[in-house]
Length: 487
Image: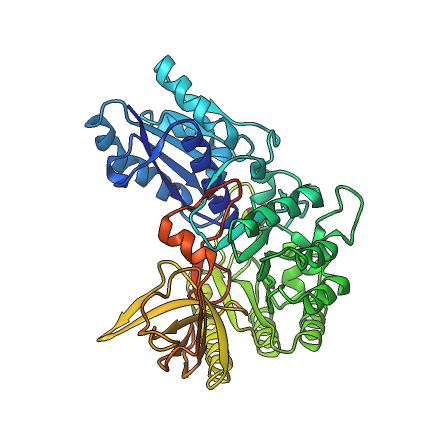
């Protein structure tokens, strides 16, 4: 009898990428995706260790699954991802009903570990200390027919004092450009219109094999991939951002006019304590250079409020940089200590009430800037790649949703364009006139101007989303809430 599975994913884009690989591995091993996740024979939890209370979320989920498993003979629970890499056997100690624990470096072992746990009737804990198989070489069960993640590297060589990622993902390992481009071309040949090049620090791509200009070359090479209409990337580090990358962005037509570049703080003193290796003037100079080359570029960022030792003057410096940069959107976080990071033991931890008050001031400023930027787009015609799962209803008005080329979320009414609005599918491309700019999205209630049916839309209708390459479920920065709570 075919066993069914479901995967619960928490955390960053890399975790989404890894979950699609886990799904592909399980299906290649004969498992079927569960139509009802509550009835799955195998539940995989792909964890994050970055967000506050990540461990509470994991053990809360495991606690809810314990009676489900007791009532479901043969059910298995597997825990992977960053928290599994960190906590290891502690997970089985605290939740002895877990069958498999595996880390970030041995995703490929999941089917074998599940079978071994069933055969031996005992929990299997296997945590590799270094990358064994590059995840992008594994099969994938893609969630989207029109957009795809393409991992260009894993791991990180930076040592930011607030971040636990390098200890969980390891040092940076780069894929060869030919392998990356082969995956991009395969996705495009399968009808995918948009890819996001993914790495912890895409700007340092190529250092491992001795080519510091490799990322700019990779962007330009993506411009020659037949059928590929949109290229995005995340995330760059300001320290390694170079002019050749900006030129490649400006001169490659299918590279989208969007940049998500973490700031973290506008205070040079705080940046120094964070070990961010750049200063606010350098950051703003990159913004200026991008906007000079790409005037309509939409720029978003990440900001941490309340880092240890942050004074009111430090925070004001952050507000000053936000005002100067005029971000289209920002992920804002309240600092909270992460065990195992240098910042967790720094003196002068900022009181929670002070962090909350500063956080609200930052959110208010950024929302004002975002709203102003979106209102400036009223009356403009934008191209929208129609997305899955983002439709909404406002009273009697049914709207579809998608992403503009600059990454902004657009809600639009599906009328006109040669039909009565029917037949617009996820993966199709439309042009609409923006009637209203809200702080977090754009709205068009005018008739659709053009509607282009695509192979991605056909694949979505047919449900053919299985392939050898991963796909994305969203974009950082735009269309997401301006606030993300605590880091």
